[in-house]
Structures are given as structure tokens and as C-alpha cells.
Image: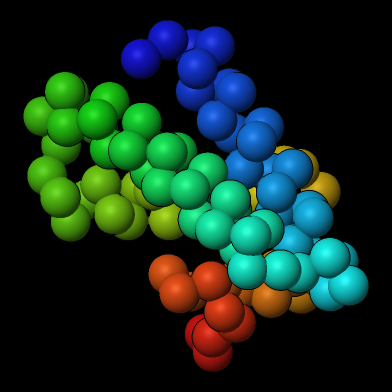
Length: 93
């Protein structure tokens, strides 16, 4: 994985997350795009982590923190956006 590919995956994910935040634009197609973008980001993150010898439990925890910080850095605060579970629909925290 190159740094460029990782940055691209992050930008696409953040852009789609921003689109999802606009309730009027929410569609199943957008939900699928967002899911695909996040799956790509997860795969890239996990592959890099696995290559460095990390265990699965720590990878999950690290990705969770990485995702929160990525969205925070993009200007999204926890209270400003609904949390999407793996199904793409809001869930309780």
C-alpha cells in the first residue's frame, strides 16, 4: 500500500461521510458507496497493521481510534453526526 492510496481512501471516506450527514441526500446507493469506501479503508489499515505483526483485537481497537480521529480532523464532531453501524443505519452507542 502506498501513502497516496491510503490518503485517497481517507479522502473518499470523509467526503462520503459528509454527504451522508445531509439527510436529504441519503440513499441506498450512497450508503453502499460509503460502506465500500469504509471497507477499503479498513482493508488497507488492517493489511498494514497485519504486516507489522499486530493482533486482530488490537487492530480493531486501533482502527476505531483511527476512524474517530480521521473524522475529527475533517471537522466532524461526535455530536454532529449519527453513528453508523455496519448496516449503514444509525445505532445507539
